[in-house]
Each structure stands twice: as C-alpha cells, then as structure tokens.
Image (cartoon, rainbow, N blue to C red; front, side, top):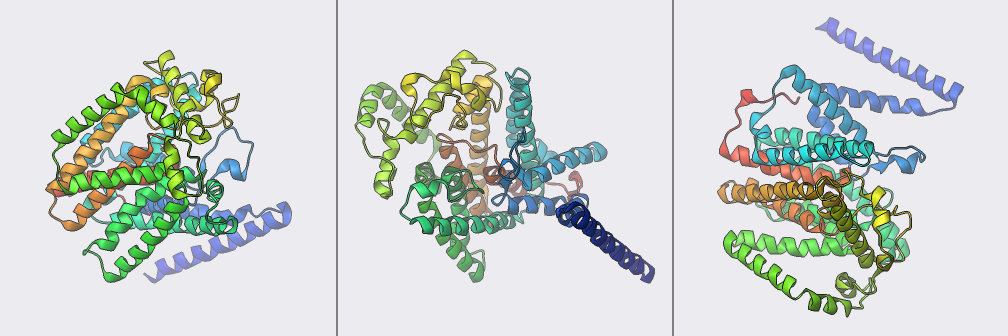
Length: 487
C-alpha cells in the first residue's frame, strides 16, 4: 500500500514538473500560452477513460457557454461549438469502440419505440446524404446528429435508467445558462431593457440570436416551476427553484422572442389537456375541424392578416400581435420567403430533397423578387429554412418530414402514457415537465430550427431520454446484467 502511494506521488511530481518545463518552453521560445490548455486536455482524456457520465455532465454544463469556432478563429472551412462538440465527437468514437469491444448495450433502450423512430429518421438522413447535392455537407450534418444522439439520448438514457440524476442534468445546464442570462441582461441594461433591437445581439457570442435563447428559456421554465412547486424536494431546493424561475421568466420576457412566447402559450394548453385527462378522440376531431375551416377560409384569413400593421416593437402587446403581420413586418415576410423557397425546393426534389444541411447553400435561386425583403440577400446566405418541418421537407423530401413527425408523435404518445401510468409523484412531475418542455420546442419548430446546435440538442434529446428511461423504469424491465458500465 505504501509502495503504491509512493508511486502515485512520484508520478504526480514528475507530471507536474514536466508540465511546468513544457509550459516555460512554449512561453519563452514560442511566445505561446497554448500549453495552459494541457491540464484541461488531460482532464478530458481521464474523464473519457474512466467516466462517460462525468464527461456528459461537462458537455451539458458548457453547452449554453459554448462558442462557435468561427468567432474565435475565422477562416476555417468548417465550424463547430467549442468546447462541447470536440468532446461529443470523442464520446461518439469511444462509445462505438466500446460497443464493438463489449458487444453489449442496454437492449431495452436500443429497442424502445422512440429509439426505433430515431433509427428510421437517421436511416432516411443517411439515404438522402448519399443522394445529396452536397454530400460533404450532408454527411457532416448526419455525423453531428449522431454525436448529439449518442451523448444526449443513448448514454443519457442509460444514466437515467435507475430513475435518478435527472435533476442533475437540468441543474447543470441551468448553472451555465444563468451565466449567459446575467451576461445578456447586464448588456441589455446598458442599451435599455425596453430596447427590443438590443435583444437580438446581447446574447452573442453564446447564442446566435434571441430566438434560440428564447427557445431554451421556454424549455427550462417547466422544470424550474416543477422543482419550485413539488413536495418531493427540500425547502432549500424549492426556494432556489423559485428564484431561478423568476430569473428565467424575466429573461424570457426580455428575449422579445415571439415564437418562444407563442410556444409557451400552446404548451400551457397542452398541460391543461393532459392534467384534465381529455381523451385523444375529441382533440383529434377538433383539430381536423379547425384545419378544415382554415383551409376553407384561407383567402379571408390572409386578407385579415394583411390588415394587421403592428410592427415589432418594445411594447409587448404590439410586439406579440405583430406575429401575424404579413404585410409590413420584415421578420415575418423574410420567414415567409424562406418557407416559400423550401416548398419550391421540395417541388423540385420531392423524394430525396437537396440533402441534409444544404438548404442554406441552395435556397438563393428559389427566391422570387416579389418575396424578397430588406433582410434578403442575393447570395441567399442568410441561414436556414426557419422551420424544423419545412427544412427536412426541402432537404430530405417527404420522408424527411414524415420520419421526424413519427418521432415526435412517438415521444408524445410514450410520454403521456407513461405519465398516466406512473404512481411516483417525482417521476410523474419530471415526465410532465419533459413533455411540456418538448412541446414548446415542437411549436417553436414551426418558426425556427436549432437542432443542429448543442444549445437546444441538450434539452431536446435529454428530455426525450428522460421519457424513455422513466418509461422503462416504471415497467421494471431493466435487468442489471443487460447494461454496459458507464463508470
């Protein structure tokens, strides 16, 4: 025992002296501070080797704080979020090596209906990557989706399989997110909190704009409110949760994200439906009737919307009502322009689309002069389709949209049935919060798309993993000998 301790102490001093000498050499000879990153790199390597879950916690915490490579070192032909995406790539590689070596993973997770829906969507992304107009772009998109899924769905579902640590996942993201919130509000304060335009850039460089920031706030509010109201947590945790809920709500309002506000309103309706246990049949019939009425009176509806002249402003009421202004509001008109381009792209290639991730490179030629706005660019380099549904439709054809909708429906069906079956009030609350959080994104997805970022992939796939893990846990179908070790 004494000999082992001596060896450990000796190795500690040798590594420390080696680091000091190497760092001194870089500073003196090369005038570089790069060696200061070596302890971080060493720490990450050790986490990868000894503990997958700790590395995932690391990625979750830094997701809201991550910054795009292009902001730090412009000029590269590729981009990624630092420090999260390199870590996620490492997790993905080691995960598949571990699977190949040990030939085992939790079968219940792998064969869960939600997992099968994910495979179906991934399979079609793969097929349309092979037929893509820009294969390199599409395969990068596919790889990014896989490393988000490996870390934040499959491994996270395994970590959650004992019914614990789900709160830790939420609080870790919130810890990093609060840093961003205070940073954004302090900058916003300098411009004036009623300055709507400032909301667009005060979250930079952590979030690209206020819309993704608002979407993340909407996804986490259901959890902080649940923590604050639940009897399952101590008074200390509930007090902290109330404070954090207040901070998130203030930030939510100051985000001036109309899509986020709308998504929260719809989510509250869904929460009411679930709590009242209203059956699916009357909801479905009502939805069909509403859609039929909209289709029948679409001309009158468009004429009514065109009469709305409310512009985006610091007045919260006017700002929200401007969401339906399709005559003068530049943001709304540009969104319609992007959607029109997506539909024209779909008409051109209805089966395979242009390839995953290619919309932003291909939509320029589909812009019509009458649809362009002051925001539009001739090069069509303004970003994505602003829709989690029309984007896949234009990039992967009709099955790109259908497979994504199948995934959504499977998640909601599983989540609601799990919530109905559960007796444990803590797990019941977590499932409901996860459902409501996901619904906010499903609604937000009509107006924007952010699943190619770590900011929204952490809650989106993490909440989905919670539903899978709790569903399996509640059925007591997770044999201990059926799982791979995570630690």
